[in-house]
Length: 369
Image 1 (cartoon, rainbow, N blue to C red):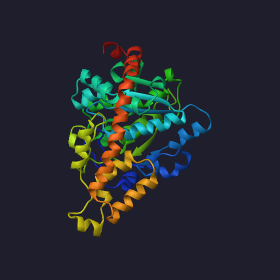
Image 2: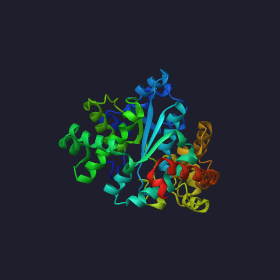
Image 3: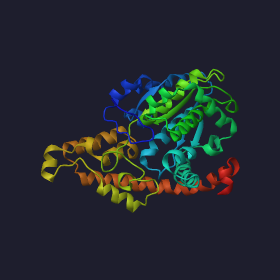
Image 4: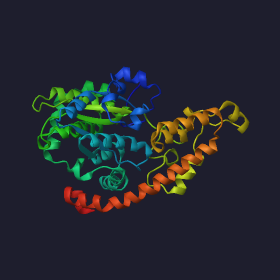
């Protein structure tokens, strides 16, 4: 059985078994109701809970929301972009967007100071979110530490609606840092349904499967907290993008990821050093073909750098047949990556005045930056 720990290292090897274990439904059930999207088409977004409630609201012209959190514990890399693309998908569908900067949680569970967390949020996350397409003016962005008294009171009231046994069974322990962080997260997830956000509405939370414990207990709290009439939050789940050396991608290991602020030269070097699915010799590769399932450059292309399926299929076929060598695949990756990074980093700097103005207007933290 898979143990999901939202604060630890989770590596899922069997997604179907994990879905069955935790009651996650396949995305195929609702795919015909979603806009065309690369991550959905390729099965990289693979599951959901109650996404029908959000899609029904959209179809009926009723309000609905999408919510996500920023965990400021390191640089923003391509593994994080998967969540942002889902936020943009729901934003384009008409969802109200709520974006929480989890500075309290990073302080309580990641040993990150509030000052460092806030700096990371702005430099590594907000600028990248806006450069990728987030409409910040139409977003409810806030720092947990500045969420307001009503928000934090709700998080304390929620403590009555989850037991210690449930908490320990879900998270493995009930130490104070985790307890405070989890209760605050329940308030974050339900914030789009608070009175100052015009009350209950279907809300979807795109997450990696490691964050499902938060979703499950928030759904329990929403059902038990009768005073507000919350709609149980829906969720979508995406596959973890693996690190460049194989295994887990980590913000703390620069060799495992390409950050969206990496220089083009550094990014190309990381591509050159990445794990491939090539064979030990050119002759064997021509004969046996490459293994795309073990090639981290192909994975980067599939997740983020090749939009059209027919082009990705051509690359796959040429690599698996042995016609394309690992070096040629890496060259494609480097060319696509250079184009993306140059354009993205230009848009990041163009976004800076807008982000700074937004923070000055909407948050006390912004006024001090």
